[in-house]
Structures are given as C-alpha cells and as structure tokens.
Image (cartoon, rainbow, N blue to C red; front, side):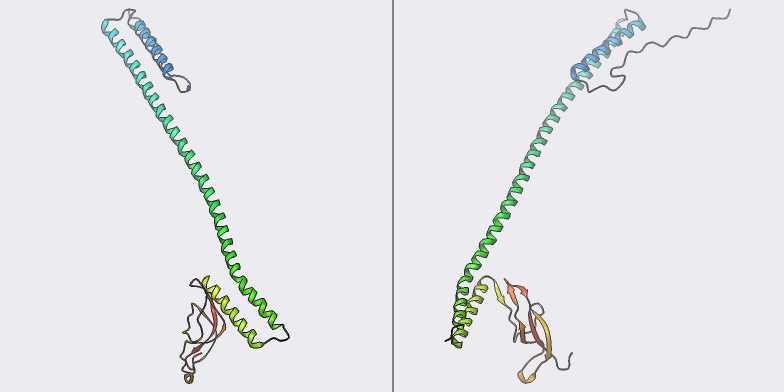
Amino acid sequence: MADAPEKEKAPAPQPDAPGAGPAQPEATAESLAAEAEDFCAALEKFFRRGFGDMPNSADLAEIRAQQAGVRDLVRRASESGAGAGRQLAGLTQERDQFKDAAARAKADFLNYQDRARKDLQRAEEQALRGYMNDLLPILDSMDLSLKDAQSDNANLDTVRQALGMISESLNQMLKVRGLERVASTGKPYDPNQHEAVHTRPADPKQDEKPGTVVEEFRPGYLWKGLVLRPAQVVVTQAEGKK
C-alpha cells in the first residue's frame, strides 16, 4: 500500500514583531522596555510550543541569551535616545540664546542709526547756524552802504570803498569755510577747472602763449579743493588754428 501523503504541516506561528503594524508615535524609554518584555515572553512561548513545555537546557540557555540581548539592546537604545534628547535640548536653548542676542543687536543697531541720523542733522543745523551768524556783520555793512548810497549827499568813492570792504569780508569768510575762487586770468588753461567758452589767437606782441586764459566771463569756485563750478574763460590758441 502506498504511503498516505504526508499532511502539510501548518507554518509555525511567529512571535509578534515589536513595532509591527501602522506607524506609532515616538516611543518613550518605558514603553520600549515594556515592548521588549512582551517580545521576550512571546518568544519563550513560541519555543515552548515548538519544542515542548520543557525545552532542554541548551535551548533554554539560548532563549535566555536572546532575551538578555533584546533587553540590553533596548536599554542602550533608550540611553542613547535620552542623551540625544539632552543634547538636542541644549542645542535648542543655545539657539534661542543666539536668536535673542541677534534680536537685541538688531534693535541696538537700529537705535544707533536713528541717533546717528539725528546727531548728523543737529550738526548740519549747527554748521548752517554758524554760517548765518558769520554773515550777519556783512549784511549789516551792506545795509549801511545801501543807506549811504541812497543819501542825497552820497559820496561815490565812499560807496566804492564800502562795497570793496564788504566783498573782501565775504570772500574771507567763505574762504575760511572752504570756498575759494578758481585762479583764471593769466593762468594756463586747465580743463578740470576752466570751461573755454571762446578762443582767439595768441598775441605775440602782448607776450601771450597758446593755451593761456586771457579773460574770465564768469568766476569759478572750489569747495575744499574740489571744483564746485568751473570758470568760464577765453583761451588763446596757436596762430591759424581753429
């Protein structure tokens, strides 16, 4: 008689794997330890079902070693996670401190900019006040000169002298403040300071040389060494040159 076909053995039940199923929230150290104990208990039950209620000493030692390994792994993972958590908390605190320091530095810088703007505005106002104060004596002299010129007994020479003194005082005050007149007539033509509005041939009889300023239409000025306005001048050129 043919041997009856051997019945297919049903697959041995597997112990529930810790963490199987849908994703769970991050576990704490206590919950991980509890899951490890459940896993170890399920593993021992599985071996008892497969090898009998009383496994031999070698199998039992293997089971105990596997359980101890699982517990140690969970313990070390918990300790590592706790250390990382403390490190993360420290870094988060340090980050917040840096953010607070940056916010304070930004606020201090904005306050400094506002104070500097106001200080600059006050300094400009004080400088203009000084200019105006220096002009007051010159304006007084101008008023007196105009009063003398409008008098029935006005002396033309006196008025001329007064106007000359006023002009000298004004130029002196402006020079102290940084304003200087561009030297023009009789000087070599300088395109950086002169604007040639007309040219004419040089006159040898007057010992004129080409490229010389011989007449000034409108004066030019320098402000602290920089050209504020070029002088409009007449410049000589070589004979026959256009």
